[in-house]
Picture (cartoon, each protein chain N blue to C red):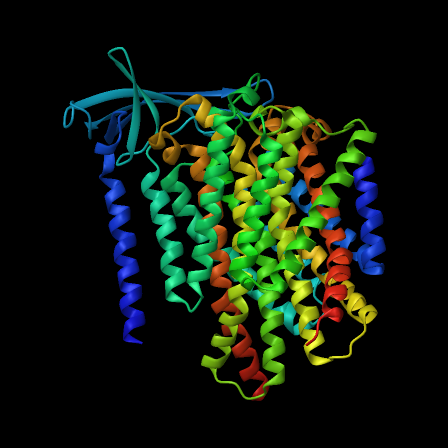
Length: 248
Length: 358
């Protein structure tokens, strides 16, 4: 582990130079924030409220430390906050409906010897899982689309709102596909052991599509995708409003 | 414009129909399914365990009607016990469809029927896609092709009892990254360039990490804690790393190489060294956000188990060692891959682009 850490830090500093230090600093803050989130939840703080507060801190770090242009950072931050709220609003009813919280029968081995009366609300934690999962994807998408769009807008001083939206979608197209790939491949990474195990327990399509863990993974991926899709129109609108304000 | 609204209308109708269908599809299931009509709480036991966690154990009686099998329409009552925190057990509500298991003449609750919400969520994504001007064809093709490859991968894994996992992962990874690039960039030399950079960077990162891990004898990395304890631990771990980092590295190589191609178009006599240097400069900005993406995805996966450990009175150190150390090793290998991709892609792209006539 230490060797890996050492290799990572050395390579990062070699490639990114002084920028590497601020990257490490940003990663450190993010990890500390997540650890704080876990400890607060374990201490009995409300899961949803704690997650929201910590997520805002993480978004601030992820966006304002990585983006140098202040107007891009501002718009990207506003977009990601809005998307986070939307994600929470979609996730709560869907998770309530799906009841896909906590762990499954597949985890039985790992659960041995544990007191399952944990006193933590796992249905709420299921919402937190999806929100945390989306943080990186959302912040990266909003930054990429905002900076792409800002570049276009700065080169063409007169733009109608339709044009900005069209440009937003042409920038967003490729970002949407690459982010979908990232989400999909990560879904593959987490689910292949799961599917393998389900198969050895009971191979029946009905069981698989209703399985708690499978549904939880698919729903997580889909909700993150919804977040990425919605980033495009929201960013386009905020960039448009920004241009309009500047003109007046 | 009218055509567009028509298309959105059709997609919405299909999504609604599919959702409604799965609500009434219990005839497709062999297991008995009931619809819960009333729930009665029989007992509530508030308990505090040895770690001072207060939880309430509730026993509920569900009364409902069979929706399928030859008992269709007949009433039934089953009991269910759950903890209010609902880690592995389940609180059932009126209106839910519940799958039962039959042992002998006795029925017991198995699980909630979740296919309706699954189809509903897929429907939302599709409707949103069709409401906006994305090039859906490309996106859906790449997702469907990749899912098909993944399905084949799963079938082979199951048939070979997981014995050639690593080989299959490598083949699958080569296929899905190829599909992704061809769909996005088309069958061009640019795609080939990005493909070779992706493959080389991922391979070097994995080999380097495996070497480093074996020098340190996997110290601090609990391979036996891979998800669901699936064997062989090491192959499972490495396969997960490859799948998870692949999408991010693809993203990175495409970003770097397409920026360099643009640059060559604008300045036709740009030198190889300048191209390489700008590749590094572009890549530098990408590393942070890309590592962040994986950081949050990996941590989110482990939230449940971390809280289970913490609430069972384990120290923070022990909890993180048992639950997150593997995730961190995965992140570090991914990080090494993401960082290495920057010089490798810049090098390959600058070589190929300067030699190419514009």
